[in-house]
Length: 164
Image (tube, rainbow, N blue to C red; front, top):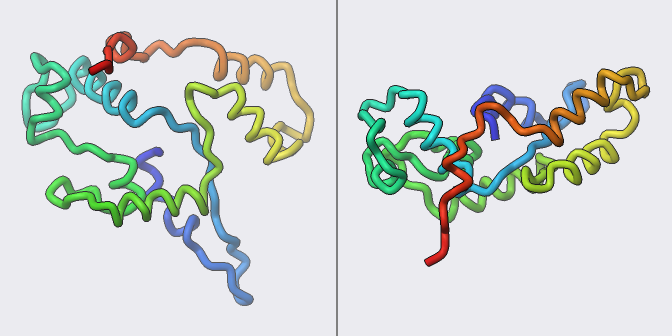
């Protein structure tokens, strides 16, 4: 979920009443494994020397998770509006985040992005493309989105062994 989810919160939770033309909002998203997301975030921050208040350039993943700058459960924090690292996340926030996604989001999975994209197109119908027509440029863009690798991918995040 994008950090911009806070920017659209008023639309997601707007109530349609007889005096308003605002309809209830919704969103679609492609989500990846929370573990893979956290690993990728670590390598991005370490490799790009993000300012975290602590030098993590020499950290291994486990060092970062144990450090005071690590703030896990970012998606839950964003959806439940508990982004303060001093605030603990409880089962209540987990259930709230899950309920928000259930009610407001059409969810796709990154490791099934072709299938997810097909599902989005079925749900949104012909208006998904310009004037209801699939243009050659649209097809090329879709091909890149779904089947090409991305240049900023962290190669380290795909080599971690999770076996115990």
